[in-house]
Image 1 (cartoon, rainbow, N blue to C red):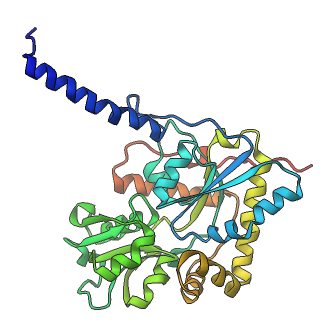
Image 2 (image 1 turned 45 degrees about the vertical axis):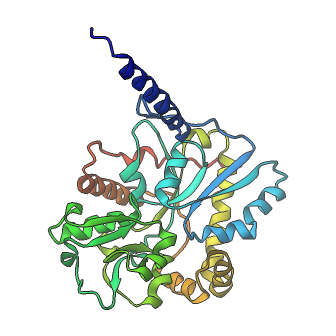
Image 3 (image 1 turned 120 degrees about the vertical axis):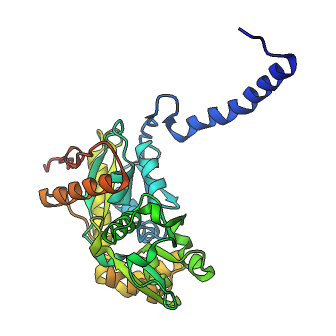
Amino acid sequence: MRRLKPRLALAALLLSALLLPVLSSGCGSGHDVEAGKVVRQPVDSGKLKIGYSGSSALTGLRERGDLEAKLAEQSSSDAVEWKPFDDDASLFQAIEEGRVDIGAIGDAVPALLHREDAPLVYLAAEPANPSAYAIVVPLDSDIFSAADLQGKRIAYAPSSNEHLLLLQALDSAGLSQRDVKPLKLAPADTFRSMERRDADAWAVSEPELSRIEPLGIRIIADGSLSAAQRDIYVTTPESLQGREPLFKLAVDAISGYDDWLGEQVHDAAELLAGLTGIEHAGWLGSFDRKAYGTAPFLSSIVQEEQTLADTAAKLSGRKSRMDVQRFARDWMPERP
């Protein structure tokens, strides 16, 4: 074997020293980089960590303290910790890694990102909301259909329901993602991105869709084109094990809050306007396009989610098939 010259040996040593912290820092993300597997953090007993992304309406539940009040009524010592994330993909990764116990994500997210070695539990599903998703352009744009997106800059949150809408819209026009110029976008930055004309088109969802409406937009495709039309509540078997009553309490609190959103739209809009920066009128517009509520994963919803997973795999090039039925088990505790 040839020995390195002194200068080369020193350079190699310095390079190793520089790379070591970078490689070591990868372990902090919760992924075993060498083995390519998800390493889940131990469950933090006594604490329920709830994640939400962007301008989620769940910020209102956090502010109202409904879940905390339910825990106090039952003399529970469990604490609630709310964790914000920029987008659904980041939240989903945190759930997979055990950094968050429960979160609401677009149903396309697991279909695009789920890793086979990281089992999930689907807790509940919101209603399908095709009107809550759209691909939009400014009113003065020369883009009028998905076919006109060829070669254009499209801003969206990667691995999201908006992303799958874009893939399906392009596919319907005989195009693919290779035919456009994708730009990563955090949903909360949509308004500023449109003001600056950072892109030619934007794939968005509520409440950001109603937030940008005053800028003057034209919808060239909506969620009716896409299999991804709802949010789902997701956890892991490790987070759920032995804590089913606590998770039921959380889902019940979310369900009650969702009922309040639908019944007291002006009060809800006023509360959320103060928390998100989206105006009262913007939230009212969002409520017109998006219904809230929670339902168990009935067989009909499981079938819809399997169709979504198969569609996402086909359009994204995912090789492994995702079996949704494995995640949609009956987790509710038995009634006394």
